[in-house]
Amino acid sequence: MRNFNYQNKTELIFGKDTEAKVGQKLKGLAKKVLIHYGGGSVVASGLLDRIKDSLTEAQIEFIELGGVKPNPRVGLVREGVTLCKAEGVDFILAVGGGSVIDSAKAIGIGACYEGDVWDFFIQKAKVSNTLPVAVVLTIPAAGSESSTGCVITNEENDYKRSAGHPSMRPIFAILNPELTYTLPAYQTACGLVDMFAHVLERYFTNEPNVTLTDRLCEATLKTIAEQGLAVMATPNEYAGRAEIMWAGTIAHNGSLGVGRSEDWASHMIEHEISGIYDIAHGAGLAIVFPAWMQYVYQHDLGRFVQYAKNVWDIPTEGRTEESIALASIEATKRFFKKIGMPTTFEDANLPIDRLEEMADKAVENGPIGGFVKFERNAVLHILKIAAELK
Ligand code: NZQ
Ligand code: ZN
Image (cartoon, rainbow, N blue to C red; front, side, top):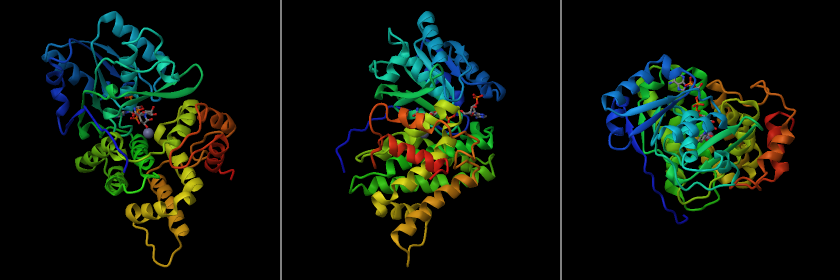
C-alpha cells in the first residue's frame, strides 16, 4: 500500500426530510447565497420552493440562477461568476445533480479569480481558492457532492474538461433518498453506471497489498449491482433508493482509492464522447467500460478473476483464467443492458465518424490510464471495439 493523506471536509446529512434543515445549516456560514439549479425538475417537484422557504425562515438572503444543462456549459458558469461578483455572493447552494454541483463549483472558483474561469480547465491557472459550496442532491451518480473536482463543457469547441482541488469539496451535502423518486428510469440507470464506474476506476490497480480497499470496492460494486436492479424495479421504495444514494457518495469520495494507483482512462475517453454528442455521462461509460475491459484484461488476468469471483459470483472450477475474465466482462455488460443502458455506439444511436478526433483529444495532455497506459492508437482501438469495428 502506498503512503496517503486523506481528508474529506464534506458533512453528509442523510435521510428523510433533511432538506428542511438547509436554512439552519447555512446560518453563520453565509450572508448572501446563490441558489443554483438545473432545467426545472426541482421547480416541478416543489423542492426549490421548500429550499427557499427554509432560507427565508433562517433569514438568509439569496438570489437564484437556474438553467444548468446536463454536461454543464462554461457559458452559464461565466454568467454565474459575473453575478456572484456583482451581487457580493459569499456562498453557493447547488440544488440538483452532478451537473448543477459542478457548475456551482466552477462558479465558486471563478468568483475568486480575475481571469476567465476556463483557464482552470486548460491548466492555464491553478485553483487555490473558492467560494464555499453546499449541496442538496437530487440524483445519486457523479459523486460530486463530496468530490474534489468538477467537469465543465466548453460549448464553443466541444471540449469537456475537469478542474479540481481539495478546497472544492462541498461544505455539506444533504442526501434525502426520497428526492430521487421522481428520477426518470433512464437517469437512474445512468447514475448507477457512473457510480459503478467510479469504483472500477479505482479497483483496477497495479498496486499490490491493498486488500482492505479491494474488499470495500467489491462491497460497493456488489451493492450497486444488487440494489440497482431493485431500484429499477421499484423506484419508489425508500430502502433501495437509500442504499444507492449512499453508494454513489462512497464510490467517489476518494476513500476507495487511498493507497493505490487508479486508472481513469475510461472516464477520459467518455468525456470526449459526451463533450461532442452531449449524451449522459453514465450512458457514455456503459459504452466505453466494457470495451476498455476487453482491451486490457490480459494485463492482469488475476485481477479480473478476482472481480469475477467477488463481484459477480462467477464459478471458477474447471475454467481457465481467461474464460473467467471474459465472463466477468460479459456480466458487466449484462448488468448495464438489464438496466437499459447502451453498450455500443449503435445502441446509443451515435455516429462513428469522429473516433479519430476523440482519440486525438483524449491524449492531448499526454498518455492516459493508470492500470494500462494508452497512447492515441490504443484509445482509438477501444473506441473501435465500442463501435463494433474490431
Ligand atoms: O436539469 P433538471 O431539470 O434538474 O433535470 C436533471 C437532468 O436532466 C434530471 N434530474 C436530476 N435530479 C432529478 C432529475 N429529474 C427528476 N427528478 C430528480 N430528482 O437528471 C438529469 C441529469 O442530471 P445531471 O446533474 O446531469 O446528472 P449527473 O448527476 O449524472 O451529473 C452528470 C455530470 O457530472 C459529471 C459528468 O461528466 C456530467 O457532466 N461528473 C462529475 C464528477 C465530479 N464532479 O466529481 C465525476 C463524474 O465522473 C462525472 O464526470
Ligand atoms: Zn463519472
